[in-house]
Length: 164
Ligand code: SF4
Ligand code: SF4
Image 1 (tube, helix red, strand yellow):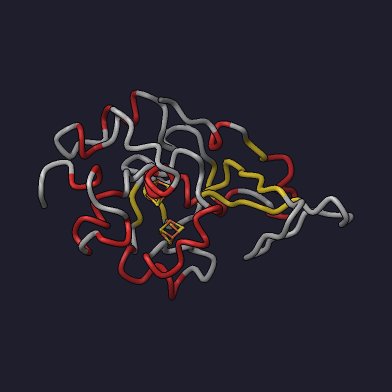
Image 2: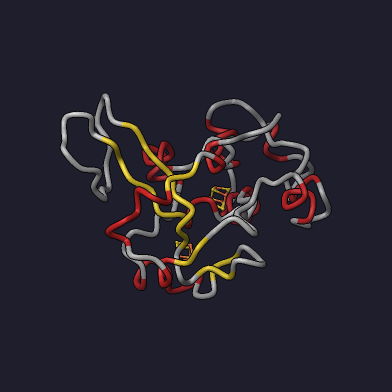
């Protein structure tokens, strides 16, 4: 990888290795989220969004996440095991709106660059990100421990925060 490749390459131009390195490993994309359709009586799980709808994040996290490391315990099989698991690729950048504002792919897609806490700017370490409070560490409850019928009780605003 060339130094600071993300500053002179678009997401589409990145190699697979570069693309993977852009992920900051925050695990916010492993949180349950729901779309609020003002015309509907109830919030409901969904895999698409239309005009006038809004995404709500919860602090309920996928049971396959190692919440201390903020990494997937079944990364290679994640799509097969968890159909809702969104794997962002160059071919589905249209789904980037599902990602939180601090998601590094979304930041680059929107021309906002990488923040100073990103692992690529911290010798590959996630500690600056955790310290800045930009990962899910210490803020989640496992989906195995909650009644998903009551997901509205777990709606959280912190996943929408971004700094820099
Ligand atoms: S939200 Fe974006 S940057 Fe964070 S772990 Fe998910 S894909 Fe990676
Ligand atoms: S399967 Fe892994 S990557 Fe997908 S949501 Fe669950 S923990 Fe996250």
